Image (tube, rainbow, N blue to C red; front, side, top):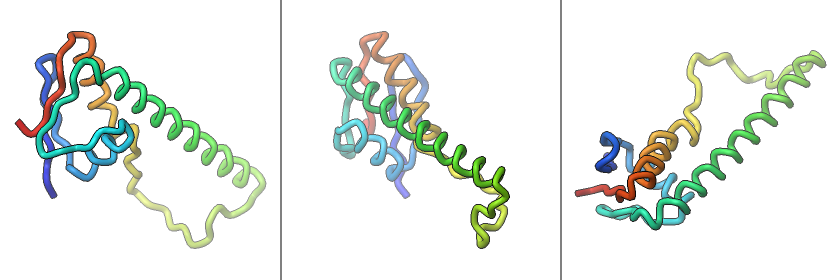
Length: 117
């Protein structure tokens, strides 16, 4: 698995699996090349797209929890085959949040975000 390193003069480096970075960049509508740059002019749209996707995920997870709570209160088994798991999924928001922070700091300082250089 390849690693992508994101850099900005106003934030520390962020290391991310390429597969995760590609999912994030699909949301912001920019291809993730081997090398690249997000200019300060591109950052507002990227930030808005990430926040929109994070909000959608938040609403979806809220609806799932409400449905599960309702079924639990009604005494219904949520999934007879579901076994308790120690593992918790890592959601898009958790993976994208460090990059969102870097984007916001870079925008505030009018600095680009680069990778692969």
